[in-house]
Image (tube, rainbow, N blue to C red; front, top):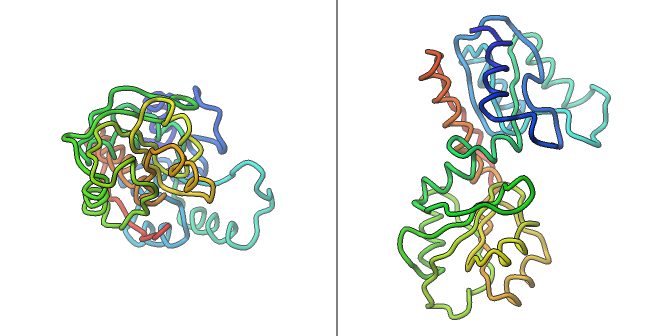
Length: 251
């Protein structure tokens, strides 16, 4: 398919025009017209782009692209090297940020909850990005942290004890990436535990004082699954060849 057809399909599928985002969503850098091979990844880093070039990608599709608000507009240094890699190799760059977080089936939150076996029962927060639901079975906070570690292959940081250390919890809220600012809204929604990717200093105090535990499971680790599901969907729908390229990131 051609790049304009793919952008139109993705924009409609993800409802990209409904979000006020920190970056443009859609085709950020135009490359060759015909697309047969598409590589997906979390971030359009130079390492990711070089791996996509080596694989022979016609297009790359990521969650974290370029041209963020308040970043310097000049094209030099690392930005120049990334864009030069795309342009010299005639590769299209598609990027979807909040639309990919929010999608009900292919989004980061939907896919993370599915992998962990959590039943989504409601949404909260800006653009309804936060999800709340129940665990597949009640478990202690320690067991929940072990489940997250086994699934994401990354040891999470756990703050708070959710009242008693051995108490079993059922209600969980989550929002992937850097969504620690939704913690208060998750508490108000009735969550016993809230999981996101990153954590900031005030989060520890809020966890201890509220009695609601906070799990920081990694920005990259929690946002690997939506873009994979989206790439697989494109491959199945349009017969494209798809490959997810993992660039390890401990953050």
